[in-house]
Length: 237
Image (cartoon, rainbow, N blue to C red):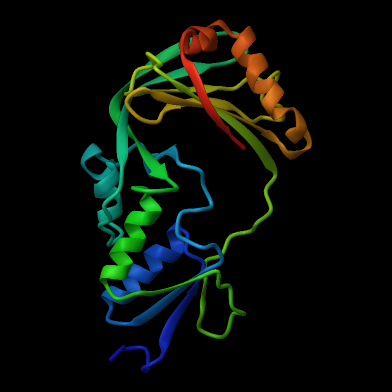
């Protein structure tokens, strides 16, 4: 028997916020169903690691790790992440490495072993019912967690195998020449010998984002040194 009057709590959208809400409602002994427009959870992203930033500089390291952060919100998913210990920062004029005092969690988003899949499994274990390819019209009492399909950015990425890029490091480059209108290029290690090089720019430059990525690799020595000798294995975007 649920404690919301015997009705089912509907959540429209199976992203992170919708899944977190579903888990906490289910823990409160409510009947919950999640409606996701896509055919599965975690399909809004190609597999990619994203940085989990601290809530504030005062947050102790014991509370800012990937699992401890989620635990504080009542969440206990099983998912893949790695801790970055170095940050290679590249501007238009110089490149420099920052050694981090505390590891920075890189969270896997999208696909198998992602945070989304971990939260979905936790929700299912609590009895949450999932409906895929479903985006019903909202009714009073529904939780709206569906994001917009519109975006103001475009991205293109390339995967390289057998890279010597350190597994505990990531690269962030801010150079208007290759990532116009304040956007950026980044490199993140995906597994034991694969890296992902991703370039992001504003939507008006969408047709050039691929060309700009390869131009950056050709012209910036720091990128050439990382990718030199690495085997290209695929693209995304």
